[in-house]
Image (tube, rainbow, N blue to C red; front, side, top):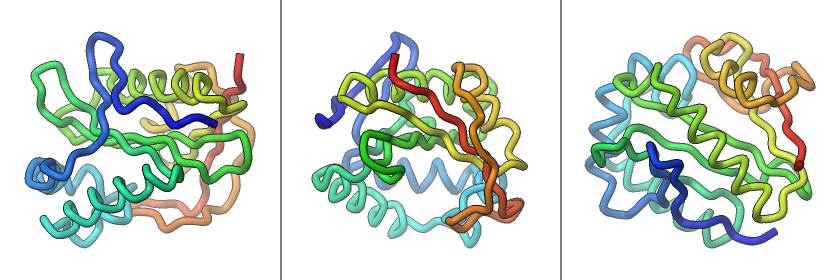
Length: 179
């Protein structure tokens, strides 16, 4: 597979690679939404420091260069960072997994769906034969995204990764195959 583009846009939102200079904005964004993120994101359960933000940004750079994970900032039309999303090469040869989160003020506007659509399109452009979205079965809002985009729910299983404070320990797996 090829490396994904460093920025993607649908004319409303912009997905761009995270920059080292985003640490302060990321820290503030996450901390303003801890109550919204902690139920589903294990990294938000015990708070989120500026050091956590810097470490995440360093990891995103290393993971991009290693072609393991391609993380993007979700940028709102006004230029503010609204959340994060990415493509992860962890579901086997030829597949990429999509992950996403939005800060609380940016939910309910269709931006997670827009971001996932952009990522799925880019995944197929770079050579993926399938894209998956995995979410805790209790996170209904996250599950609405793949349903809206025409993914097929293919599995429900115990999670292999830690969850947030509301995690059920079971995940739904959705798949979209290349056109």
